[in-house]
Length: 326
Image (cartoon, rainbow, N blue to C red; front, side):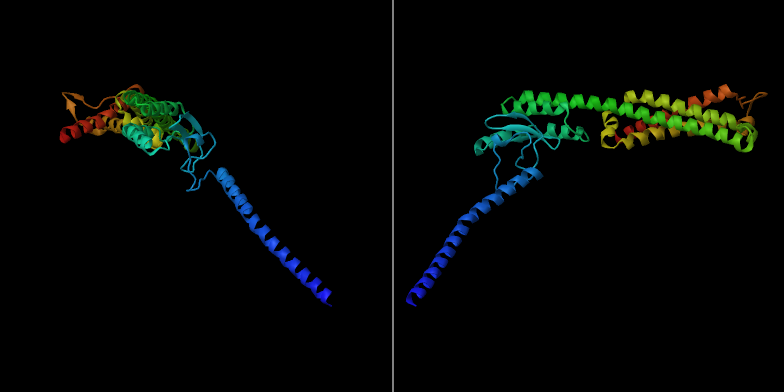
């Protein structure tokens, strides 16, 4: 009996010892599980391009495909020195400063001198997606500034600004001409469809439907072409702010060009109707009436002249406003 109890107690002690051992084993295993969870967390961060707030990113950690201090993915690395790194992330050129506090303050003070030029560049480069050759030049300017060559960095950024403005001016002119050309072709096509529709529906010509309608249609079409020529010549005097609207919102240039074409069309129609009206017929110089005899050639010339002179209206308004502001 005593042996059975002793065996039972032994078993109980062994079971307790085993339970304690298991408990100790579990206690030892927990940090492993925590370490595994941390590993999972960092792996997830790499996958989602996030970073934890307690993870300090150093200059040596700035590598392509890694995560920067903001939690964004690094697309490319231009320069990585012992105390700074310059890289591209999210379409912007970024600087990772030194870990040393004094060096970091000195670097941020140096970069602060380029704030105005960098702001202009960011505005001019708005809408440019993906990597472009300007990013490399910006990185070079930042490197020069951090190396103590601030004057050269300013000159390089100013050169980039001038280059981008010229490039965007050219793009703005091209888009402006294409939009106005499309508007002119649309107007001429609408006039042609209207004439064909008259013949298709009523088997009649515009003149048979209304006297002088054919010449009016010729004048309006010619007015659109005259306005197109006026717009092309006016582009030489346009400022960069108007042309650069292409990257901000291309519809601004399209609306401006369409408005000028419509002004030319309306001016051509109004001038033709004025010349063909009975108002001039009642005015005589001696025995000759002032009303001209309009043929298809004169209708084209009148419409073209009226469309070409549409620029007189905005030019006169601009001069008047300039005189008032002075």
